[in-house]
Image 1 (tube, rainbow, N blue to C red):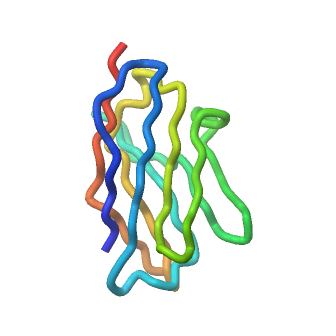
Image 2: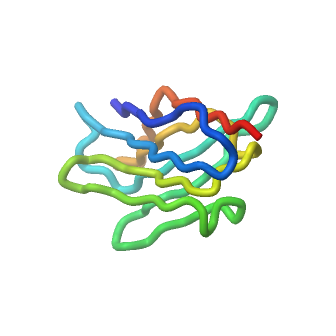
Amino acid sequence: QLVESGGGLVQAGGSLRLSCAASGRIFSINAMGWYRQAPGKQRELVARDIGVGMTIYADSVKGRFTISRDYAKNTVYLQIHSLAPEDTAVYYCHALQNYIEYWGQGTQVTVSS
């Protein structure tokens, strides 16, 4: 199970920190990350931590979003700065464990201009 938190309504230029905690059968995670889906658009990768200090970011968020993991807590975070209206979307936590994918229920991020 993946449980996200930290979404909300924020003004453009603001910041948010999303959290995602894994529990239950998800305890030996290979990679964790964040995806987002805006209305009428496909779900897209935002950031991903694949372990051994390697992270991947979408070009649109580089320099503004930072992903981090707490391995002891099986938690992944997404620190977001300089939010823009185009960042408005449902943000989903994703975990990969032994080739099995897990998804969170999503948390809404809405950025007002």
